[in-house]
Amino acid sequence: MERWKMSGGVLSTRDIALTAVFAALSVVIIMFVPGIPIVGMSGARITLDAAIAPIYGLVIGPYLGALAAFLGGIIVAGYKGWHLFPILTSFCPAVSALVAGALTSKRQRSVKGWIISASTLIILIVGWYCTDVGRGAPLYPVLHLAGLGLILLLRGWASNLFNSGGWKLALAVAAASYSGIIADHMLGNLIFITGIGWFIPLKVVEGWLSGMGLPSVSALFMYMLPVSAVERLTMTAVATIFGVALITALRASGFMPREE
Image 1: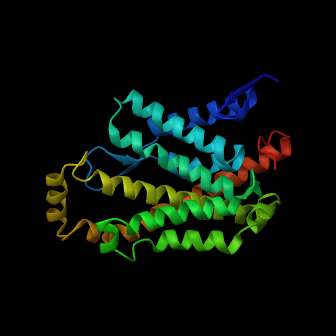
Image 2: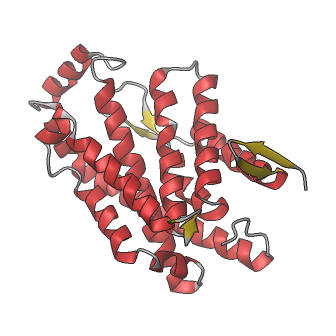
C-alpha cells in the first residue's frame, strides 16, 4: 500500500481517504445545517459539526479525527474569507475529536489514551482560570469539571466499554462524546475571551452587556451557563445516538476503520 510520510509518522492512502471523507462531512454540516447563534456576535454561530466531531475520533482515531475536523473548519473559513474567528474556532471540533478518540483508546504511542483526554481538559480548565473573566466566574467550569471527573472515573475502562456492544458501547460513546464536546466548548470560550478588544470590538461587548443588564463578561458567562448546559447535553445525545448506530453498522459490515 502506498504511504505518505509526514513529521515522522506514516499516513496510508486509506488514512488520507478517511480523513478527506470526514472533512467533507464537516464542510457540508457547517455550510448547510443551521447553527446556534453566539450571543453578542452578529452573524456568528456555533456550527453543528460540534455535535458530530467526537464521532470522528471514535471512528477513525483521535489524530485523524482531529485532523479531519480541523480541515473541515478551515476549508469553510477560507471559503468565507479567512476571518480570524472561524479560523481559530476550527481548532474546537479538532480538540473534541482528539479527546473523544483518545479516551476510547487503550494507548496512543506510549501514553494511555485517557491520560491524553484528561490532560487536554485540565489544560483548558486551567486556561479559564488564567483569564480575568474566568477568575470572575469561578463556578462556570462546572460542566467541564464534570467531563474531567467522568474521564478520571472511567480511565482505561472506557476503551474496554468501547470495544464491547450494547449498553457498554453506548456508555462509552456518551462519555467520550460529552468529554469531547465540553472540551470544544471551553476552547471556544477561551477564544471568545481572548478576542475581546482584538477581533471582537470592546464597544460592541459593552453595548450588548448593557442591553442585557449584565455588569461584566463574567456575569454573561454565568447567565448563559444553563443555556450552555442544555446545548451541550443535547449535542451529546445526538452524538451518542448517531455514533452508536454508525459504529455498530461499521463493525457489523467489517468496515470499521479504527483498529486497537
